[in-house]
Length: 173
Image 1 (spheres, rainbow, N blue to C red):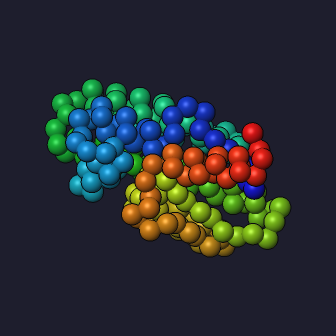
Image 2 (spheres, rainbow, N blue to C red; image 1 turned 60 degrees about the vertical axis):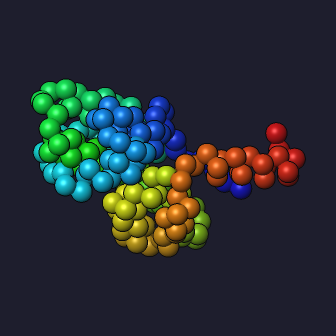
Image 3 (tube, rainbow, N blue to C red; image 1 turned 90 degrees about the vertical axis):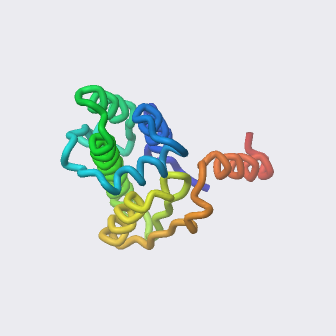
């Protein structure tokens, strides 16, 4: 049983990573490619927005962030360093959004129940920077952090399919 507290209103975080990698011409899977490039980038070099952080609630938006990354790529010659800086800035913006929205969710949950476990899953959970940021946020709010081993952090589609199959088995349609 679960209750959705918030959602993305457009692109999911993983989808935004994939599309950003593609627009930057990175090779391989989007999330890991952005993470690798970000290692040599300066997150302060490119100013990117944090959509919906100025609004209450837990819904997120990554489409505008992806568009801002594209504009940053078009504003100046796309050197290897510029690409790395955009990746670092993009990754930090996603981390900020996920951390703030997760903190709000933990505060809401803490008001209603004594359960204190924060779980991350899917491909985005394989990003070490995001994972570390969310783990620190969970710890700060007194939550136990759980993430599957990295080898199991793949596309969230398999988890969604299993959840659907389990619900169908229980008679939900």
